[in-house]
Image 1 (cartoon, rainbow, N blue to C red):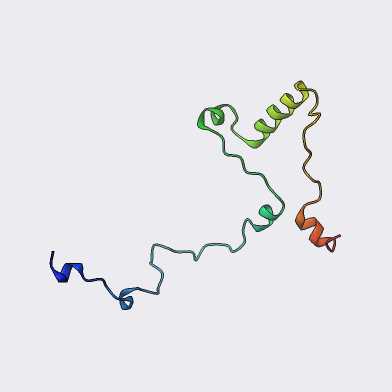
Image 2 (image 1 turned 90 degrees about the horizontal axis):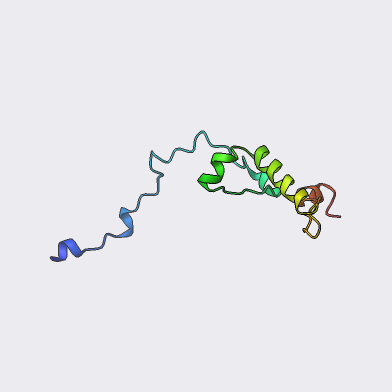
Length: 93
């Protein structure tokens, strides 16, 4: 290997402009912010489960049936009804 091929390029070769393929002109800032703050749960289903449960309604119905069959969900922890966003609107009380 020669010194020419081993030479490390200096910082002057680093471009500060964004590449054309990174086009965020149609993006919306904070599009999912409210959903995130309100503690929306995202669950990733395996492909075989997705074949049976195509949407959140089907999943929720199946889980509610399972909860009823297991005794009504006794002993399960309950998610707080007041989210951070609601608490912020109420003045943090």
